[in-house]
Length: 155
Length: 149
Image (cartoon, one colour):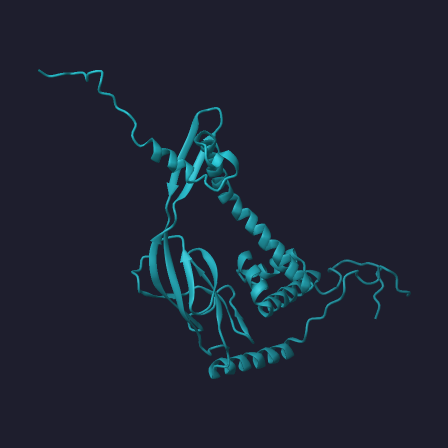
């Protein structure tokens, strides 16, 4: 029977690779990355951390300013646990959604706890003699990221 | 003798008018024209400036999100994926990076962004295959489709 425009579907047919071969390839890649981490062949590491309801892309010796209060004194070391992504030059470890605590360790120190500059909130309605002015000062905390460590416990 | 009302020559007069005026003018010093010098014009301009800044603080969030989305769209098109496909497949693969992060990664970590795009593409193909099924007829249905061997 002759082939017409409706014999095959209009989208390109996609073949996924063989699952057994793929599993072998994945195991090889994981072994290689494990070896690289164990021997320490990575340069500067960056991490994406979920902290204070925001996501931050951080490296070591980084400064972070949060717009809220942290219940820790100045000079306390803090470990950030919700790590979403860790990357170096040759490999990245993507968490689904988080990476394990035995895989990554992010340490930070609280440097200063200040207040923000006075922000002015003003409401005004014309011709109705209505205006309200409020000065908002938010507490802020500054953290310095000391180190990002990864351990070779991939499987 | 106790005087209950103050005599007429004792008046309470405003002494810090200068500083009250300066409080308003200090926010108007970088304005253009006479509203950076004259109090009456400055009061109106400063009031409008404060109101606009409060409203802008709420719109900044919308504006920045649209900017991130544009950047992610541009970066994912470089890797052959459209933005809705990229984001939906990334969420289905349980990667919960927000748009700000993905935009920053696309700018500063191109290799990481490429791997995210590959992950989304692979998940997309798996989704299509799961939706298409085996390509067999449903049970109990007889049809005259000719299958090419």
